[in-house]
Image (tube, rainbow, N blue to C red; front, side, top):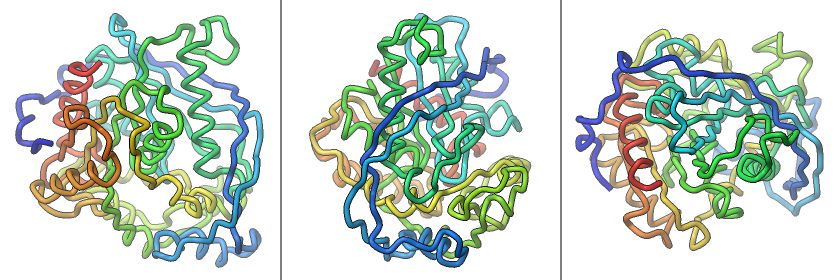
Length: 375
């Protein structure tokens, strides 16, 4: 674990970036998942009940899970696939967004090339695939937000996605990339990182490395617990007549305070709010199932990155945040060899959305230096 100051020489300025070759792809995946059954579910027609249930996990009184039930479906998962000109690395990063985001998060909403993960990865020779999780983004299906759109079905979809990309021939109807990849890297943000750790625990052969951003074992959900939430259908009428269990943040100032800090392009939070997606009642209600330590199942490289002033995870100095990352190694990855886990703290004035700040170049440089060394 090393402080961010060691990476001041690994900057990736926007002037070095070249345009990525990107396209939209669709994966059609059949999955079955053992989803959570809640002992006291809310009335799906009662907005107050739905909001209170959804926020209960953030307020320290999570819903009681009384068992599981099998949920199956054939789902379409949309993605943005960007390939570098030189694919000699033969490595694909699969990018998974966090709560109230879609795959647009990874492009920085098109505001500034310096905050575009696709561009940074492609310029280091890595292909990228940013997906919309089930129920979010431009995916055509919006299943029941309480009973279907939960963590475990997201895990099963990710597993099938990894299997398809790694093993299905380019002519396969379930692998629209037109090629397979020898190495697959899971890259997550926040809740997406929690899903990545869960995927690695349940299916350790899927990913050759994990990059978990905005992720520690010291969680402070207060900014989310006290925020004003509203049904996405009210916030974004163009989203259609969605069930009330698709919720989003109603206030741009609260959203900015939760996800940003210090040094960032001021137009980013504006675009962020305009593009915001949702959190489902099922994702929030069963979030505890994604916070289980990864003991001995996964032994491959893991890169942890967070901002020194991440309001949900650190909200302190870079030095103290680094101690939190060291604790995360003990809490979540006790069986991992020291040289296979690297903790990176983006400098002071970097918040929860790690690569959407002025320190993005340092984050990109550190991540890809690590992957180059380990893969």
